[in-house]
Amino acid sequence: MLGMSDRALSFGVMAHAYERFRPGYPPELLDMVLAYAARPIRTALEIGAGTGKATRLFAARGIAVTATDPDEAMLTELRERVPTDVRTIRAAFEDLSLGKRYDLVYAAAALHWTNPEDRWSRMASLVEPGGVFTSFGGPITLADPAVTETVRAVRSRFIDRDDIASPDGTPEDAEMQWPGTELQQSEWFTDVRQAVIERRFTLTAADYIGQLSTISAYLVLPDAEREQLFRRLMHVLPESVEITADITAHLARRHREP
Image (spheres, rainbow, N blue to C red):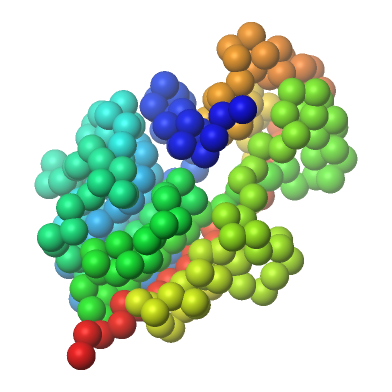
């Protein structure tokens, strides 16, 4: 069985598909972060930038973004799509130098890949006192319960589930979700907030399958099994599907140092 680290490094082989099929992030997300910060955000560090879906949102507002990712294929895709003044570093979160601090540190659908050991002390060392940390993302799910059940039945022959359970075991119906639960317990952060931006899209069946092809649970399947699963899904899916792609954002402020 493949572990979390194997799944975390499975994306590079599909960097182009990731860029093609994963949705970007809306301007209201950045507006939310800036309003929460309540002070100028001039510098930002992005953890697990992927192909730069979130990078371009923050960089477009004049923020000096340093985008990091352990996968060179993802960074290559990113560099083709972001402003030239975006700095890139090929490194996992755990390998980043701790000598520089930023007004903002953020992770877009990537925080769950980081090592929980010393996560928040390391994070705090990257954020300016009074600065902001935010993590945001969310699953892409089928809106129609009947279609959802059909897909689940086909998928169950190959994998049990295609999402990632809460890293700290927080129930799905809890008022505060991870990583807000951990941030609330951290000595390094305060003023923890959770907000949801609702989104719904219509995709063709082919584009929905394309989106599935970028999810780690499918990427780690043997090629033949993955292709067989996708063929079966195409056979049962309607011509187009409604999907829900809500963004859940968590924001926290770095404690000011004495």
